Image 1 (cartoon, rainbow, N blue to C red):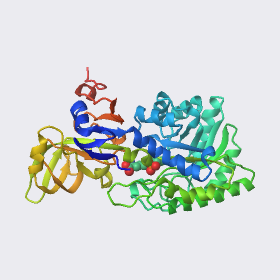
Image 2: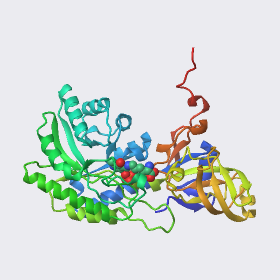
Image 3: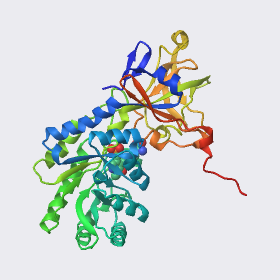
Length: 428
Ligand code: LLP
């Protein structure tokens, strides 16, 4: 399902024209669809249902993909759990009405303060990534008179075949406990007084378009679970992480949740353990776009530039990973642009922001007929867009709007200039 459709007033999300969003809330602006978020979550539920696994599964939304309270609240209402990686994310989930007992806590470097806060909240499980972390958690739990529920995150040494920056399951990665040390660490964990062994966890990377590496990782994990059971350690749940990729480019093949999960679910169907998944991108990525306006057209000797009011500080993925996002013209309807637009000739533009770096681009070589003042929609920006935004170049962060049918909800106001240095002070 595509997030946008063409209406009489140009591109729209659900029943709201993007021109109306820009007129009311300005640009740059992130726009999300409640229906699309709900459908993405529904696709996971349906896939689990089809394999008879829904009742013993927990879909923990990876908060890092987009941590807006309205989005967290929506997933909480749908029954989701949450995968967090910091005390900040823990606080967000609780503030958004998420249940603590459906939270798993991932990450290679949890602080003692974060451990304590999560123990006090009563989370479902810590995904522990090293022997030292296990000892620290045992100590923190002991001093708080708790037992910490624990999974070990194992590193299965599987090549996820994705961008190296978001590949996490190879031996040389900083993530997880090395596969050949995991068994011994489980044995040791079982002897620690303030650790309660609950499960096993694995996450091999992000934006995976092929389900095979995840299935290979699942095989390794299941073999380890069985070996542990034979040694007297029975685990209650198996967490296979997140990672399912989405379509960023029209025509590019991308799996459905049903197809991506099928090989994993087939392996799990006959077993007794509960299942946990940690999807981020696939729940929010294609449910959001970044709306931006063309400020300046700058024809050049070799390239034509369209300078827009969004930049790498708003959407960092192109600069950081050379990532592709489809860019559409919002088109008709927004004022006088309409007539002028039709007069413009399509040509290849570099879509760039105003930030002072050549890496500040949102798209290369995009064939568009543009006029200054036109609105553009940068698609597939719901995941790792706003969540990775910064104030670089002292640019206030964008507004975020959720569309629900024909209603627009402002779910994060645009930062203003005063916000930029509200936390700073000059020397006395
Ligand atoms: N679980 C763990 C332990 C993770 O590290 C991640 C993502 C997820 C789950 C969710 O993975 P997903 O379903 O979203 O693929 N900023 C990058 C992506 C970084 C992913 C980090 N970890 C990007 O914009 O592509």
